[in-house]
Amino acid sequence: MINLEIKVPSDIEIAQKAQMKPISEIAKQWGIEEDELESYGKYKAKINLSIFERLKDKPDGKLVLVTAITPTAAGEGKSTTTVGLGQALNRAGKKAVIALREPSLGPVFGVKGGAAGCGFAQVVPMEDINLHFTGDMHAITAANNLLASAIDNHINHGNTLSIDPRQIVWKRVMDMNDRSLREIVVGLGGKANGFVRQDGFMITVASEIMAILCLSNDLMDLKERFGRMVVAYNYTGEPVTCADLRVNGAMAVLMKDAIKPNLVQTLENTPALIHGGPFANIAHGCNSIIATKLGLKLGEYLITEAGFGADLGAEKFLDIKCRYGGLKPSAVVIVATLRAIKMHGGVAKAELGKENLEAVDKGFANLEKQVENIRKFGLPVMVAVNRFASDTEAEIELLVKKCKVYGVEVALNECWAKGGEGGIHMAETLVRLVEGSAPDFKYLYNVEAPIVEKIETIVKEIYGGDGVVFTPKAQREMQKLEDIGLDKLPVCMAKTQYSLSDDPSLLGAPKDFKVSVKEMRVSAGAGFIVCLTGDIMVMPGLPKVPAAEKIDIDEKGVITGLF
Image (tube, rainbow, N blue to C red):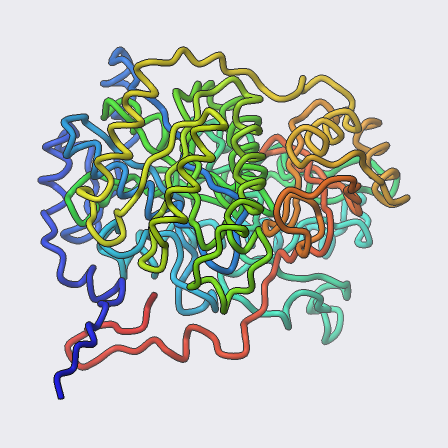
């Protein structure tokens, strides 16, 4: 009997067969000088910020954002599309650089390795990127926890700032999923061990330090933003900042290398800048302004991404990151899969392999809404259909037809299986869109507007809801922000990624719903107001079978199971 079964290689197996070039060679090809490169081994490096002075007069390339429909358990593939599109543009004769978010540690995250792409559209060395990489996450952890220890130490030694231990808002962090650390008690064991109080840990990417890293324009900007962070309130209700504790300089020292963007390459040797990136359901969900601006200087096109669907990552990219970075995108690519569209059309995950034109028709409402959302910012937009083997010709034909009727450009994306070659149609469509359009970019709301107005604008215009409900706690916190003059900041919605609403069970494009804001806090250093809706975890837990159980290494150092 002939075995016709074809084994599909895993992402890590594909990555381990990659023909990588020395990172010094990648840098040289893209105009990065030797003294601007700080190598971390043979295949990864940091780029010294002195490069900006040399390139300051060079015109910027075109900024393209990759976002997606509302995520589902079926997957969408933003990172894969971003990598594949960059590779395809270079194949098509356009000089393209990609900028990605930096993954958390794969083995300890519990679910997957992170944001390194998939198949033949990956960044490498994949193992390093999904592990310790260049140590940025550790630097963020150290800086965050230095501040946490400084707060407790200040109180222990007399508390001249009159910090109210009941109103300390700064949490400790670690780059680990550990539900046992969400709510803890510190200071047990007597006077020598400080004072007893309730505390807790968040995962490192949820730290305001991460958000500041991504929104700073240089090291001095980073240090100044650290100083503005509100860490607690005193007994009279006034904010206590990091600058009051005089440790923002030391924290900046810990971050002096982390602020430099990381340079790696794709499977096809396209340069990739990987630097920073908090989760878009708890913060702004984008990589760093520094990496984005550097990519714009190095290439004709800079392809970057924002986390989760366009209602989260893209909105925050455009309203927060672009506002602070002075960035003006040229176009937006919305990634969709027929599998995800069918889930939004009511099909269970186990049934996604079966043709279902009715579900495609119904689920298209979510894609339609996300396209509409991008158009509200005055930007050209196209759809990239990330193709799966189970997609039928009839389903593809229906989706393409519906996109054309709606008036949005659409291209098939086969980058997972074919790398850059599978993205040529997508790249050509993008170039035609960019060169034939005149973006009229505008923010969704006026940052000077009242907090309520900014939140209602996002809920009504982006989510499609009909109003906002504020809990008494959120109302008190909002009043406090107004009283201390921290209300004139962009709004960062902490919301489920699985629905346009704050209810993860409402798929498609729900109507007639209200969003409930339960809590409100300020990230004064990062420069935004966080509005918490639903049950958003800033310290995730591990699943029943953590990813760590499937990850191993042999005597030759070959890693298996990492994504």
